[in-house]
Amino acid sequence: MIAIDVAGLNVRFGAFRAITDLSLTIDYGEVHAIIGPNGAGKTTLLDVISGLTRPVSGRVTLDGARELTRLSDTAIARAGVRRKFQKPSVFMALSVGENLEIGGLGDASLIDETARLIGLADQLQRPAGTLSHGQKQWLEIGMVLAARPRVLMLDEPVAGLTDGETDLTAELIATLRGPDRAIVVVEHDMDFVERIADRVTVLHEGRTLFEGAMADARQDRQVIDVYLGR
Amino acid sequence: MTRLFAAVVAVLAAVAALIAVAPELLSPYLVNSAGQLAAFALLAVSLDLIWGYAGILSLGHGLYFAIGGYVVAMHLLKHGLAVTGRVPDFMQFMGWSEFPFYWAGFESFPYAAGLTVVLTLAMSGLFGFVSFRSRVGGVYFSIITQALVYVAMLLMFRNDTGFGGNNGMTGFSVIFGRDMADPFVSRMLAIGSIVILIAALLLCRRLVTSRVGRLVVACRDDEARLRSLGYGTLRLKLGIWCLSAVLAAVAGFLYVPQVGIINPRLLSPDVSLEIAVWVAIGGRGALSGAVIGAILVNGVKFWLSARAPELWPFILSGLVVLVVMAFPNGLLDLGRLRPRALKFLRPARGT
Image (spheres, rainbow over the protein chains, first blue to last red):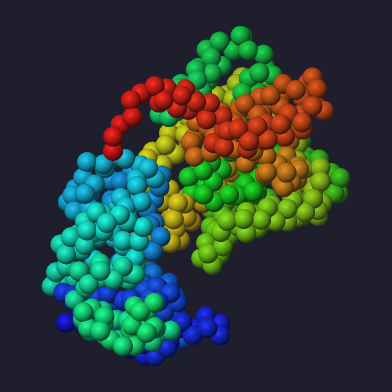
């Protein structure tokens, strides 16, 4: 079943065409990775889906019914489409527990369970500003997760993490997948992507270059030329 | 920090009790000063709420302070006229025999008190809504607040607006039917100001430690993150902004009867800037810091005004430099020095 349907999307910043005629679908139950070189439009695509950037043309539909390009970022988040930013964005002055409480829209019952999932169950009182980089990444995933989103978008979840932390993040994402949830991951770590993704879309200069399994992407001549080969 | 807050409230309560029980120990000047300082502290708390907690710096809070001040001055003049027959000075020099129509109703205290809140909410609500909706923030917002207070000052300097013009309003003779020169009245005003300050502190404390308070801090730290978690930040910012403005107006409402005069100088941009200086010196982001900053700075100012007023600008600037260079969180950093020094003695915790 299709969660997010992106059709004929065009995004421009002045004369720069960030995304050109992009169409793709994100299905429930899958982990869908979006990869590509810098400037390919990966983060821009997430920005459009989460309502931070308005496209010139094209549609983004949730569950075949709700047109997201006309909703505010707040309304899109309320509809269950949540996103972790590239730079870890947690509320530094608040504790881990308070961050999770805000993420869960005030539902305190989910705090403990979410904290266990992200491995911070024993650190609820700790100010988020004192966490390590990896813990901040997880806390942000936890905040996004605390409201039980239907569509979960993770922008570079393992950037700057150690190998051990990357392994834990891969395990975390594996436990998060489910028939009622679509997970989108933007990442540069190809081994990580191969471990977690059911399907990858390779973007290049705002267009789709390849779509399919990661193993096949690694064999694709064009993908190797513009991205993997370098 | 909670201990400090409790200590500040306790000291304030003790001062109010002292004025009530043993007024003969304090000179009338001291009682009056305590009341004025309480009004300034309330003004500082209002700015700390919006700057320290919400991260929105207003450099024009004098506007809301002046709304409260002008409204109470109008009430006192109308009330004085009704009781003693004394015609306000500005009516005489303007040669007016009748009040402008918008002076109607001001002889009623509840009307004046209610109007202060309504006017402040209307003004701050409109300005806040327009600014926050179009995502005006940071220094742009601060500059606009400063411009707004300047515009208000120019407006109030005009003599034909019916608010006393450049002379402002003074000559308040009676309040609640009692002679304002009566020391009892002065004591009641001081005690009332301190009690209202304590009430405001407790209210703000409740607010900042509540879930809404945490959302306000979250909005300060990363508004985009909060929005993308599904929170509408407009209502949040507007709410705290309007509350802050109302507290500032209440402070002005308490201040003007005690100082006995209001004029457009109160709307001068440097007065509004100074409020931010009090909060910065005391320590923003902590309610007790705002109170300490306002009382300390103004206490020194009162004391110096009789001895060496020419020194004041240098002392104030020196304090600002000291805070910026040495104590980025204001004087509250002094309290944090000791625990931090002791931390080195403790064994490091493995995390």
